[in-house]
Length: 154
Image (tube, rainbow, N blue to C red; front, side, top):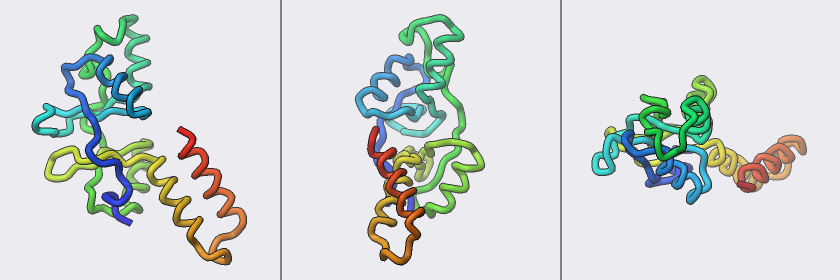
């Protein structure tokens, strides 16, 4: 399965000079835990990624409101990325080795999507739910159902 089949396309992004409020508002609206950071909204060249955890820790460290802390101060520069044409197995290996839950999807240097563990879990659950009854053990089916319920609960 290719990443382009699983990813969320056209993610909203922020620039490094925007404050944390901008990223937090996107997270609230989209019910997500990370926002890509791009050089500019025009170029969409990925320069970092920021998670809700990154922001929380930085705000605690600075003892400042989100409107006074730039994303540049709390983003992770040069995140691991994956291409839309890549296989799911490659994404899983990359997420595992980098210990990340989300991968920005980049094509020709431009941000085109985000792949999350939720996207992978939903795809796995769909694959198992459509499988022949004899193809999956009861334990595998139970795990797939659990992953699907967790992934869809958010």
